[in-house]
Length: 310
Image 1 (cartoon, helix red, strand yellow):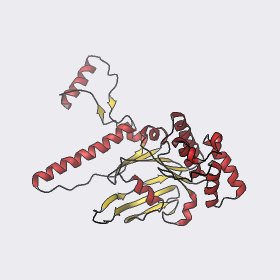
Image 2: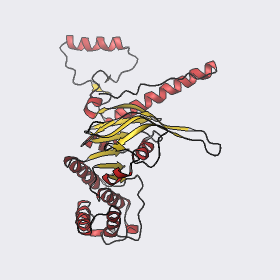
Image 3: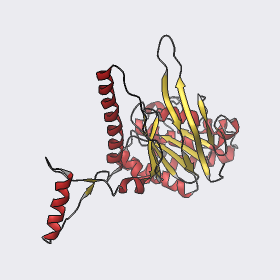
Image 4: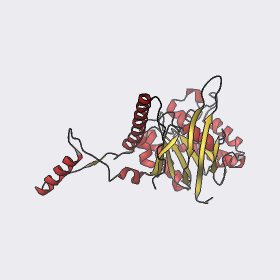
């Protein structure tokens, strides 16, 4: 495997088996992605798209039904790679009676970090997260935003090469969100690789180099944000009851009359626009197939191309 690749999946598939009469669930279907070392990669998708399953597979918390996942040059279930990963789950569970210092010290000991180095890192992270004023307060008295900050700190205590962040800005105010994004960008400058999951698409657009969008367990599109959002062949004009030929004639007419077209807006000028278009198009196609299937007595099967945009 290429030494410049931090994460690689090959036809990664996960099927949750039937249990107590429940149907099998295809949570992830032949996922193929490469994440380069030193980049910030965004993994996006609606609820039930397969994001959480993907993270669990990369962390070795569950095993794939088919395919393979490689993390930092080793298979995802290799115990040796765990010490080089920092992980912030969507919902952090901490001992509520411990304060910030005690919490980070606990996680530092799990990584067998020497006491002197542990203390240095704890002080640095608490200052970096803006929690000096509450460092002696039990976490049970922390707000959701403060708990998010201490969660990010515990993900960094082992100075990981790969950092996986699931909703890192959830619960943070605008100032805290800006500071967190600055921290992530600083980590990138230090050569860290960051895999980021977030429903706040504006945050992803601000800091990610590349993104992948999942839906119903399948990769819909992947690539560099600037390439995905350019979409020069797709434009959006707000009109009604006009054919495409007529639109072209209108544009030609304006130019012939020496008029100036101020802008023709790209339909995917933001990451949010791209995300919604991909998901809505796919679900609309599925609904059309279901309607056809009901009409003939059998649903038509089919797939959507999952080739990433290069």
